[in-house]
Image (tube, rainbow, N blue to C red; front, side, top):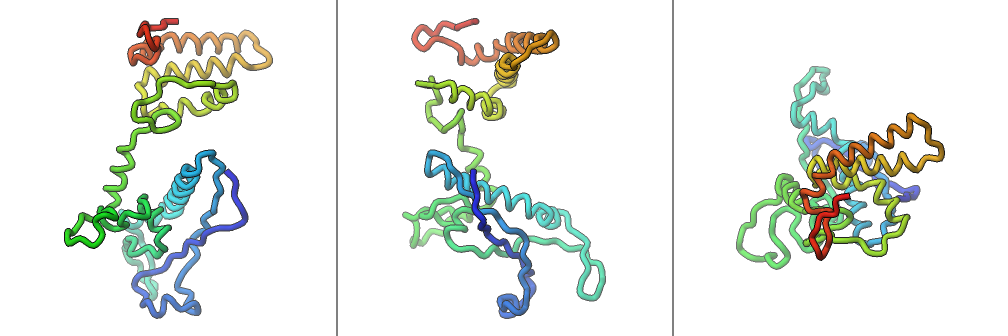
Length: 244
């Protein structure tokens, strides 16, 4: 990921200020909350660059607006113009964006309604479609299955022409990828195997380090039955378990 010397300003204001007053530059009714970085991702798949960019903006907004979300949920003591303390809540009244930014925030494509569940084929019909809510968006995102490095409807059966570099990259993030998708014993076995690989690659090995290698290998054999039980370690044609 690389970034340039440019950023996207996020401004915030109060909804109880009249629009005519708020929109005047001389009123200074908007406060600069944060400068969102505009990142340029170097992923080989072009559409993934857009996905990563949108996810990056969502994560930045989630961090910056955390205190406001807490105030909207449980309230916050604030002083009014007369110095009196008020128990206030800060719900988001509106978010002023253009259409591309609105699509990104709503996690929809350009031909989909941003505020309802209607698709572009439904635009102009007389049916009142249900509203698009945060709960609906989160439910749709959670329903997307992810396996290994990419979404395959039939899963992944094998990897072809895997180089040492690819193996190195997989060792860096395979445990994180399977953490919420594989059974607990599978995750423990894979993590122990990765520990064994890393520990055995050091330049100098003493007795204490050798014991750590043996412990990692012992941990793998203790939990490898979880991999075998899932059918993940068997011959493609014979279906015989490769128990080694």
